[in-house]
Amino acid sequence: MTCDEFIPQPENAWLELTHVDAGYNGDPALEDVSFQIPQGVRVALVGPNGAGKSTLFKVLARLMPVRKGVIQIHGLPLGHHLDCLAYVPQRDEINWRFPATVKDVVLMGRYGKKGWMKRTNKNDIDVTTRSLDAMGILPIRDTPISELSGGQQQRVFLARALAQEPHILLMDEPFNGVDRTTQEKIFEILDRLQKMCVTTFVATHDLNLASTRFDLVILLNRRLIAIGPPAQVMRKEIIRQAFGSSALDFDNLMVVDQCCPE
Amino acid sequence: MIEFLLTPLQYEFMQRAFLAVVLVSVLCSVVGCFVILRSMAFLGDAIAHSVLPGVAVAYLLGGNLTLGALVAAGAVAAGIAFFSRKGTLQEDTAIGILFSSALALGIALISTIRSYATDLSHILFGNLLGVRSADLLLIGLLGAGILVLLFLAYRPLLVVTFDPILAATLRLPIELLRTVFLVIIALTIVISLQAIGVALVTAMLVTPAATAYLLTRRFPQMIALSALCGLLSGIIGLYASFYLNIASGASVVLSATAIFLLAFFLSPRKGLLRQWIAARR
Image (spheres, each protein chain N blue to C red):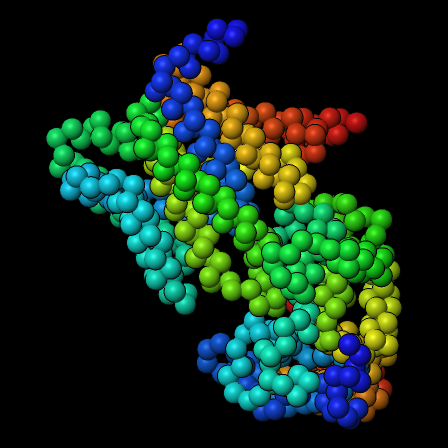
């Protein structure tokens, strides 16, 4: 199904949040967040540690409940779409010592597309092979996942997300601790997905990447600070607003004091 | 040699014992693969010990021991879920409390019976040689049921075990799967009572699966190899028990341990010997 079939008018928002609050106890980790994302754009999600980037992803993936507000995809509330969203969590959330090969893990991405009892068919194999190939990990498909490097692990995760054939792809800090080749592979995929009308959402603390390689930037610090094209959002006074005292300002150079989240 | 192997099989009680030990060992080994990868060994141990009061009450009332064990296992599993609900207590703390309390209650009840020592040791360590045909039938039926359930829920259980986050985004009923798996563990333990005993059944849930984990790189292979290790431990253990005159449950478990140690030292990929040779080069 193409984007056009799905969306009556091209100007309709693919993803829309209206006054969303989220978080477990006490003060919400996200407060009164509203924005609209058109279909098929590459979005960078930027903000200091604890700004609620992961929370936003978890809410979208329905791993965490929405406390207040409405989230709509294709104009329908969250949960009315079965397979439309894939989530690539941070790598350390998985037991990498599990006895499985690269191919086994990527094939899991197909499980949601079909009945749980159905056998793997030719289409599943094709999609899996294509996803492995797109991430450049076809040659290591029979390698146990316990023997992978950090970059390879990230590619396996991304290949599995591709195998899910999502309309929206969420990636949490995919550039953390990966090699340059993997980073370029990820951008290659983002470009390709954009052509296929897939919206991609990448949480990152790399302001340089955010301002050069994405169509839209969302600056978040519990509340929405700014949303727009990088040239509009990545400006000194706005970044200072999001990062507060951890942003240092040297004339025209902006330095943000941020250690990577563990 | 053949005579050595056939002699025990002349006795009908030994034939039943062999069948029982084979069924139970294979079943425990298969279920155990999920148990160790979900880090639920402690929970398995807890359920095993918690059936003791159930068995004791059933014994005192002259009721069905298996039924008593099932009720107790269900109660403790529900209790653990209740006490650790919404993070009130860490799950392993809740398990620790209920597990020892259930064990104490079981011993308290059994100590009121006059033939205390024999009965207790049968429940704790199994009484393989006393397996009746009716017991075999129950083990066979429940065991087949558990294997069918595992087969049907294989993919959801695999995904939940490997990646709970993917499971959630694929809209899997995670809580239901957890409950189903708890029921599977409880049933497995209950039908293993007679053959292996409360105190040793955890070993059969963990050791063959751990052995297979060392030797394989894919989950289906791990299950198959674990079943094979369980089968071998059961058979070797029972022969050892017959000829060396040692308690059957203990000898089955020790056989499983011996196989595990072999794998641990000699495994071609993860074994100590391989690491030692690699270090010398």
